Image (cartoon, rainbow, N blue to C red; front, top):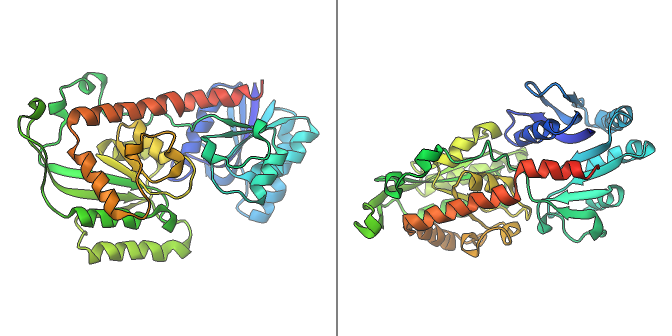
Length: 372
């Protein structure tokens, strides 16, 4: 089978769109030929020979005309068109694809409902989405299929080798170390980073005793302090003021030794950050299944999120209220106080959710089956 995929950017070193590189690679591994149109310039080196990438020019006006032309040229060579992410790709590719009778399958994961999403729904043959909340109020329910997200579980996994993973729990517990929290994503008010920072201030810079000596045969465990790494940056310069306000908040609360603004990190370099963290917090208000939460889960990291899209994915104990630092601090403390056996059971169950329901290998096959 031969397919055409249209996506925002193909670049393994990109922080935001780097995951799409793995989608392209995995999809191509199951096809005779994969043509890819990349809306933005990127780096497609090291992809297999059966994958051919076309990068559109930087000028947005030129893209509107060149993308349909590229689809027109490739339509006779492929069995169908897979439009990944933005509705514009479906809208612009619809006419040239249908001239040659090619099926269009669109991927959409966002709570937003605007005219472009409605037009996508009218034009496409099939809509794939990560969860029910990722494609809301559809006009044509028969077009929508919930497939789960696509996380590369070979890339995002626990740091331990299998023998080490079976080591006694006491050997894996941290003794007199910091409790490390991370949060990942673009810096924007909708991500509610201020609640995480305020929660750290509520917890205070204190040494916290977590496991009583002799309990379940485990040693006494102490965390010197709670630390936070915020991985990401602003996309729009108008949001720079929000980032500056977060940094000012950190200074005002005297949390400079506990909060670090890391900046962008390429997707392929993210696994160690998840693996070294004790807890991942996502306070996103996007309302769609955020892949960074699933990546953390796949790396067997504890997670807390306020994102409503995870209500049917995570146990209620791992859901938190948005804009409520006090409740968030209480949840963090609760997870810190959990016995090691309970933590172990939770993180294993989190990875199992991703492996079973949000596995990129399974998603790729679901995409291909849409064109058979």
